[in-house]
Length: 301
Image 1: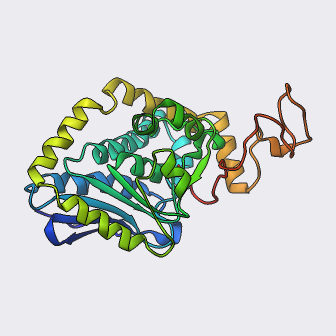
Image 2: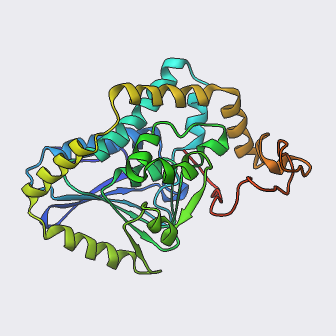
Image 3: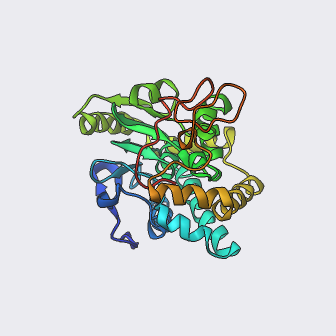
């Protein structure tokens, strides 16, 4: 079986006892997901799923460098929004396949997160079965702040967290760091500074205590009890993000990001206003974005 990576930005590393490391290797761009990476991750996972249960007992998702994954490559996403409708939807469909393949993988998938898991990186985290994170690692999906819709990722966030805990992330574009992310159900274990590798090793050892074939059956039952999004819902999410990318808000939001200016709907764009009127001021009052909602710089999904 050919397990070579289809792109130099992905690396598949076999470890003892049926453990496989799938490493994002684009640290100069904080592991932002290129179209080749979005296609390559599910391709590699599809090859691994064909191995015997004893040969593939779990997969560890990691990001090289200081950041796990800063999301989709925004330049590529912006270009998709300016492409034709079908090309735009096909790009969104690749992301849907990415999250579905990770979530449906027959063995445990562990995400090891340092720095940040944003947008598509956050999608990989919530599609995983177990997340171990550095205590400073931040999680979020700020598409709404860019005039986009966190569409393809939304069923997986709601499936993991429930609607109430998903709302601040999907609607408010908020981000949460390690301990608070753990309290909200995003992270399963927080590692102290400098201890992420040791904590990951411990989590792997704990998972290897479970029998490989029994674990696969348990994972299959979990997927029956908490199904992945239906084909109809998935298609709706694809069309939603494709329309948002091509729409006026999406184009204005991504243009503002590249210009390093607030988007036109942000309260940071004008004079202070009061409760009950649209906020366009630098100083916002009740109901405006707060900390815990900090949007990290860099590429987003």
